[in-house]
Length: 84
Image (cartoon, rainbow, N blue to C red; front, side, top):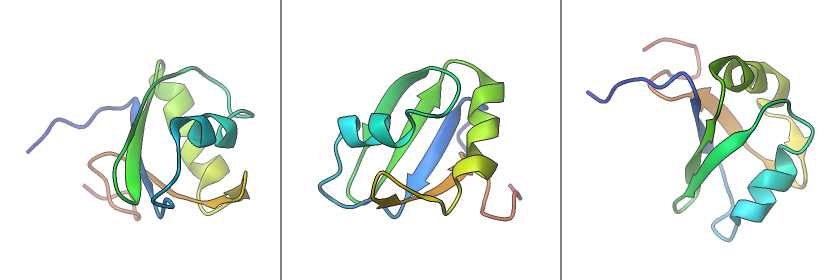
């Protein structure tokens, strides 16, 4: 099993045509620095520089409609209930 990264977040429910710029705009009001955005077909991952910033994004943005995106967030390696 892959190691859980405290700085990486899973993004689900993404439109297939979403861009890295869309993701950056979606998180523009969040604290912290995003160091990497990886997008696949309908999902992706963002990596934060600091684990506390990544942790704070989940409750603030989970199921919140921002920038026209309805995105599901979770820590990598955890399900929606916070269980591994």
